[in-house]
Length: 90
Image (cartoon, rainbow, N blue to C red):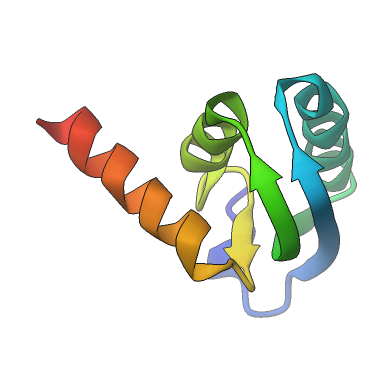
């Protein structure tokens, strides 16, 4: 089910703050999966995210708009995501 197309769909906000590294991804993925299993569309709030590694960036790129939506993303992280998309497309 694609919750983004259902105006009545419920969502849940998962706030990610501080650092997001490869070692955190299994737990974050578990939170996303649990939300989806409960028929909630996960919104990842990255407003307080200060640092991430490339594995975390790739996790965000892979899941954005497919498994979750990213909200309140710092410009620096959004720019890095755009650069990775362009690199992958080249």
